[in-house]
Amino acid sequence: MNQIPAIIMPDGTVLCESVAISLTLAERHPDTGLLPPEASLESAYVYRWLMHMMCNLHEVDLRHTYTDRYTSDPNGIPGVQEAAAKRWEKAFDVIEAELGDGPWFMGAQFTLLDIYLAASVCWHFDTPWLLARVPKIRTVCANTRRVDALIPVFEMYQLNELDGLV
Image 1 (cartoon, rainbow, N blue to C red):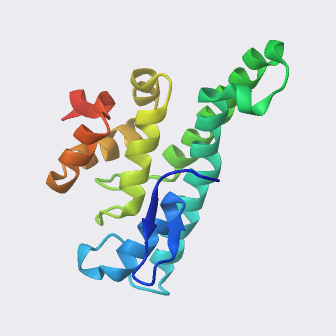
Image 2 (image 1 turned 90 degrees about the vertical axis):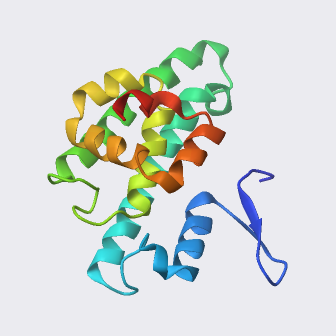
């Protein structure tokens, strides 16, 4: 698809798709704690929610942001954007309903889910509105924005939508 991100694996194979890259790196560096133990119920939970975010948040972001890719009718763009906005709202509501009292998506453990959720919130076309209506997601995003190792990532990608939460 000629898209980024992509990494070159030690054998020269190019690995693309952000979830695949993230899972591979987390598996190869278990000391980070970004993934629960392999084959645990918790790891299945992480996989489930990563797929939810990729299919129901990232894909909807693409429909809303790059609307022309999803219709050949220029008059259809507003309808595609409106449908995407409603789908986005529902997908975030599903996550909000699942979250406990935090501080992380999985409760006490910081994982890849927290990073993906924070990035997805930053991609939303109206982040302040979204965060005002999903307080549990807001808490996870505020905590994720405070992770020292992620500060350069937020700055490099100019994901400043969460700066006020710090």
